[in-house]
Structures are given as structure tokens and as C-alpha cells.
Image (cartoon, rainbow, N blue to C red; front, side):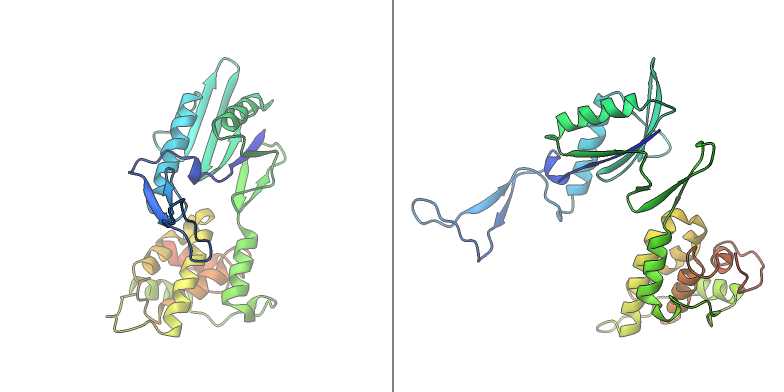
Length: 274
């Protein structure tokens, strides 16, 4: 059984590990005390947008789960397990989202969510047997023993945004061969920056950002994306061909063959349909 949950306004529910912060009120909302002195806001909890806020929320959430009997995995930082006389369960977390899996019944998940609601002012939403989680599509096999997480819509949206000419056509794109793609990715070097980035470099940065989401469910993209990330602050123009190829060949695009080859170096024919 699967149960997903989401803690609302999570960062503000974390314990602030730093000194209290102060934030100036916007000019459109001035506030004065009795003497006419301008007031400001005192931040006693983390605020979304502060650099340490995510870390402080993670510590707070992890400590809360530990008090409820969940044990952090030694190998996977975002995974927790629960063992008791009534059964076992596993949980994965992404910031304020969590997904609980247990063999049957859902009693551990129900009790956990009830305790989280009490800890976080009732602002915890949950759903049994979800079909998606934190942007991932959830697919289950017929025996309900295996799960597959994918991002088909994210891939399609990325292709429509960055390669609109390919979104509604099955025409084979004019892209480098698989081996050429790997050679380009391996040879990327960041040019010396002088002034502002040009239009091509800005496009490449946006495409790399989209690929970072897709790579979560496509480890075959990891090596090629690492090459791109190394030059992201000032990308060479050649990086755009690598980005376009990975977007097109990702599931939901045209083929997965070139993306696998760019990552692993396997010899294959460019343009093969997956």
C-alpha cells in the first residue's frame, strides 16, 4: 500500500538554528508603533528563500520522524524504515513531500500522518494509492510488487519549451551521431567569460536546468549531464547540441539510444527507436 503526504508551509515550521532575523516591511505596507517609529518583522522561524532554511527544515523533519520510530537509512539519506511487531514500512522524502510504502493495511502510514499533523499544526495533506509523487508518475506492475517512477510529462514539457519544432512531429531530428555526441560532451570546455552571456549561452543554461529534473529518473543521463554542469556558468555553444540530443532522446522524446551512448560510451547506431 502506498500513501503520500505533504507538509504545508514547511520551512516556517522548522526550528531556526540561527539568531533571529529581521526583515524590512515593503513600502506599500508601512507599520508604525505608538511613537511613530517604523516597525520591522522579526523572523523566529526559517523563511523560504533563506540559504539555511532548507537544511533547518530537513533537520526538523528528520528529528520528528526519528521520534516517531522511523530509522534513517545508512546508505540513502532521504529514506527511512520502520519496524515493529505489527509490520514494516519504508518512506522516501523530498523536502516536504513523503511517500510511505508498507505491505498491507496502511496502519503505520495512518498513524505516522496523524502524528505529523499533531507536530505541524494539522497542515499535513495525505492521499492513499497515489498515481504521482513530487512530479513523478507512479506505475505499478500487475502483482503490485514493483514501482516505476517516471517523468513523461516533464520531458514533453521540456521538449515543447526548448525544442518546439519537434514537439508535434515524428521527423528524425538533425542531431550528432551517438559517438559524436559523446565526443562533444567529453570535450566541453568553459570559455573565458567577458561581459554578459549571449542568447545561446542563456538557452543552454535553461536546458541544463530542465535536464536536471529529468535525470532524477534517468541515471543514463548522469555522466553527460555532469559534463554540461561543469560548464553551466559560462557554457560553450557546442553544449547546446548535447542538451538538444538529451532532450530529444529522453523517454517521451524520440529515442533513448543516444542518451545512453553519450553516458556509457556503448557503440550503437544513431537514431534507433527505443
